[in-house]
Image (cartoon, rainbow, N blue to C red; front, side, top):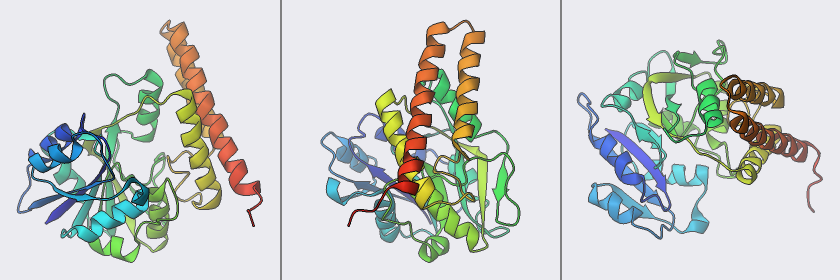
Length: 292
């Protein structure tokens, strides 16, 4: 059996398409169990999930945590393969799940993750970032053989783990972001491998505003400085603020070459908020005096 765990909150706009895509999957000799962990939706998320035959477990908003909630979903599941999927990530095609789980338990691979592509309405710089983070070439990462050019080592936006691997290393429930990268860190150090499977594709992107971008990357920088080493990268997998700066310059120049002056300004502002937030988070993580 394969268990798909989906955390939700107010995802009525997208959860139906996500669940319909799961129902269309073509699998050989596998049953699929879908578990939705809802943390206080105020829209029709729960009703839509139940209408698609998902098992819904409700928690309060205060009980939610990226690692904690995924651990709960894994505890409630029965599958030997546990797939973590965001409610706003829509699987593409009928073989998304098959491509994702096929490498598991081969050559010490205990986790896999999908390629993420931008939505049609994504800003050019958001699409550019995803293109850098999720290339078209497959890769396997281990401590002995790091995958060159791969900036993300694992992602629970759309990723699968073996039950044994999760039982050995549950997600850290004490960090508020990048729990997947911290999990990858521990798993790789235990001698196992993680496979990036670009034939398994989900549509997933966000057009974050300047403030939200700054907040998100500040949190990522803080985790990078305190909890995740250079093996797994800083949550989104960029090795440093210099890497962010290179992507920012590429986005701005690309928009200028296409004659999009205003778009280039927007790209510069958006990427600038990422860089500043990331640097601020690293500084806080390394130099902030703990409260007594």
